Length: 215
Length: 240
Image (cartoon, rainbow over all chains, first blue to last red; front, side, top):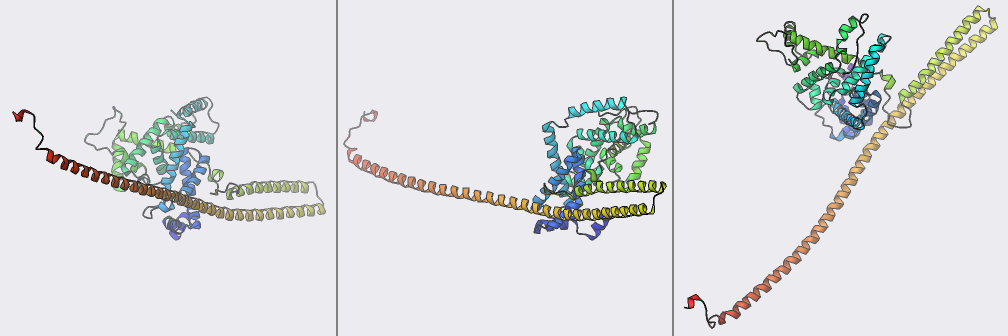
């Protein structure tokens, strides 16, 4: 509701960014940060799988946006500009992480194996713990997806951008975005095959303990 | 469809929507008329129904990963390293309120117990006084903290702007330095070109002098050899 009021009564993102670009208007940029901090931070968290690292990345996104204010074109949407910077930064971060060997696929597979044993032999005591564990498995499975699939899911599923908006951010045809989304969901389904039975499993939770694992 | 079960009967002469179209369907971006058609197709095509069910399973799995609540890991955007962020200050205030609530609870319990064990009127009034004093203290702390939070908010905003301006200034000066060094290098190249041009002109002049000298020498040689040509006897096959 407050967002709706802001969008109806306040200046648009583009108007504020225009002021930042022409007059180095600090308060206008501060308002843009306040509006966009949460979504950008969420995107960084979904892309890197690390909410703490997402905080630093989010700050980096706004610093880059401010530094690039002269290059911002008033024809485009400010959000497109910002999402693009955020995704570039996340891709850089993922590359660095892979180069350093953090969260490598092998390590994840090993951890997944351990979790499999834990889940199979020692089922979580309550539903909340089980939900947390499912979330953790999904996070790990998402990190195994190629980044071009992960970014589409992060923007469409979690940030609720329309496919044509994602196409504008990524500068690719809308059909390609949809195809990537389909492939991403297919691969995720393969990675979480036992978890995909969650609807059946949740019906029979009392009689059957599902075995979760990241394949 | 991609992963059709070979045993599943596929209705003949039916066009299956492609995965891209199914994505628009699953994320409710399909126009309603087309959506109705696809719903009807789903009802009649087990292969498509199975695939869509699998994708829906993945979608619901995605919903299972929730990020921690923002207040646990989000902090205000304050690049200043030393300053406490607004949320950090707010977080500090939260335990204080909890302690105050706990103290109030203990006092209330004590009050109840005291009444049960027949307290005198004087003790009661003292207790009331201490409770009032405590409440006053908590109120004072609260207002102090709210002042602190307001100050921190203002400070953080100002600091953010200052840092951004500094960053921009640093970038501008760096660009200016780059331009300066580039112009210096250009000037050096110009000077070097001038020197080269002068050297080339000298060489050209010398060469021209040399050509003229050679030309004169050749003319002189021709003039020397011309009278002697008739006097010299010719030997060779033509002479026979």
